[in-house]
Length: 388
Image (cartoon, rainbow, N blue to C red; front, side):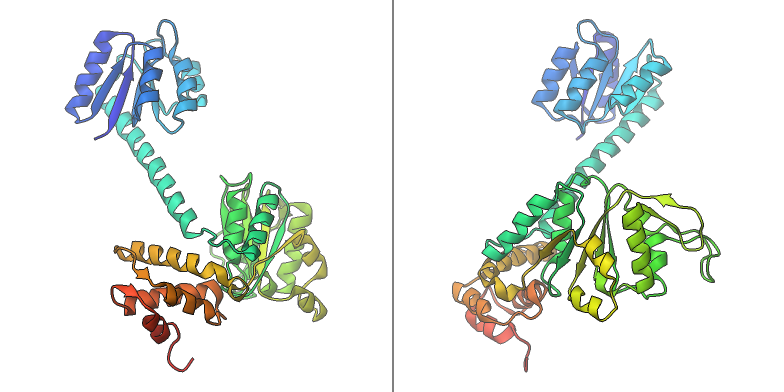
């Protein structure tokens, strides 16, 4: 049941508001001044706070400022009999969700409370989802090889330096890009991913830079490209070695001048984007073959991070297996299966050409095909498809 706090020095107003809100099945607490209100906020979690502005001792704006430090996600609805546009604007700037005049209209009050509760729920859900996502993309392992990668991420993340991430398919290059973004000053901005290998060469420029309506046959409306979508955040160019030479030239210009031009347009658009790139190719060989621009390579590779294949960090396999068992159990809504130590030791001896991605698939196969726990016999029978 949603919990609401009313901070107001007038007993009659508190009683009236409490009666109305309790009739709507809300749990309501009261505080007769700002100090007591802040004490209540420090002691309990409230879904919404209704706060008077004109109060003796500490006024509502001061209460709002202090409360935003203590519980920044709590929606505040400010109430005043002496409200002006300036007061409302000031309250909003300080973090208030809404502003109502006394005596508040009943319907307006209830709509504002419901909307504030929706916002509060969305903030909570977003935090839960972010935690789930960050756990899903967690870099698992304690090997020396992975430790070097984590150390590099720790150093480069707070900067705006461009990073080129190399490594074989399935080794976790995307995890490195996400970790850099999440620990950067742009973490609250968007992380936009582009798989350059999955987009036809004739469409990659439109995908990256957008296009104007009518710029080509199927351009029936204006499109915002990935560079603009990532403005203020991070753009991750996965499999950048598969990008066409013409798109490479435009990316180079965007990196040099911090501006792009949509396909079919003639207007320069300023963009503030940090670019991370990844590839499973040897770009120096691609440069020799004249399929990748050397100047773009040097622009992208201010910092180079190589993600080792799983075969070079076999000691991480037990930790990875335990994580995948938990993730799969969460997906299926079951308890995680146990795995025997000899089964884990056997998995460490196999050749993991598909790297971490292949290991995850094998663990899911073992969960499905094994009994109460994954045994050595299960691992020998199912870790490798017949004939492989």
